[in-house]
Image (tube, rainbow, N blue to C red; front, side):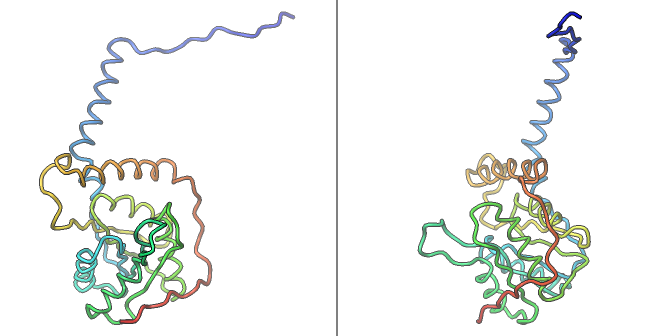
Length: 233
């Protein structure tokens, strides 16, 4: 028996026309994302929901806008989430969730309608940790909404909705509201360094979340979870 270490195979290779079509498709996809990607990521899909989740890192103006959304949206609960501010070595760090809850309480929302969902201290996968914290806090109160809306800022919206939908599946439908700050520079995104930076970052982050699940698995929330404390006014 003759020993064979290699064998002949047929390789399919594009023709010149095939390369032109592939290049045209790639350029078209790039241009579509260049001009329409920001609006795609800054999606608003508002649902009739029992709970409104506000990501506290969006700032005071955003939290006040979330209060208006809560007042006019027919919600039963508003959940404040997000982790710690500043960099990990800063001595001035504070919790976005607790500070957002204080603003909401001071604006007149009843204490029994405000839920604080402070995630574990982490420098990575912060949106996922926030979604898990919201799930735990609501389970601790025996609240199982059929739908909730996530109130966040700009191009972060579509990724936030995706992460929350994964955490809350399959029993809760997740909507999202993309709030745009008034001081955002108008016009196309590449004329603003701040918007360009956020857009590029969220493009990569959304693709990573959608395609690779950020390298993590998802678990159902426990039957019981520690109750989050409500900050005093």
